[in-house]
Length: 164
Image 1 (spheres, rainbow, N blue to C red):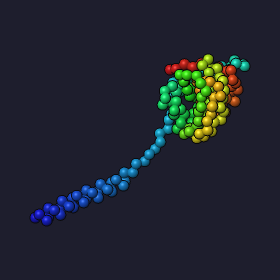
Image 2 (image 1 turned 180 degrees about the vertical axis):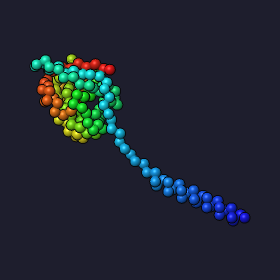
Image 3 (image 1 turned 120 degrees about the horizontal axis):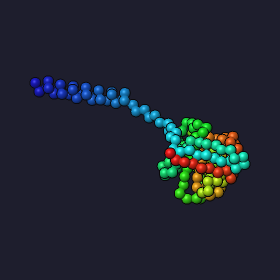
Image 4 (image 1 turned 90 degrees about the vertical axis):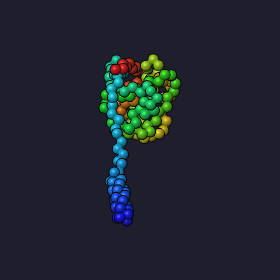
């Protein structure tokens, strides 16, 4: 009788162990990266000084440490009338790079008076080279590569923005 119970217990434990191990093999974890999508947080207008035309964009605002560090990383695309505005507490030379950024960008550096002071055009995806402002800046606007030229933006043009 004892041997019969021992055999049944052993069989039950062995069966449970086999089922557990085989189900672990079937339960493989698949890691899927979630794309970060655009979230409109305000509107920005660029005022051209030469011919007084305007360009208006929907913007995301990067004003926290996390937002500033991640920027437009992990995005697959961005619409032509969208951008990200980085807002800093201080005014100094800025240095950006394209680590984990999948889309080419133009960077527009803007001083505390909201005037454009410099550009970095056509920054390439995943390039970790430093992209300096070369002048003190309080704001940086990132837009799709080529738009600075398409819109004929110049140093001295200005911006204004509103938050939602």
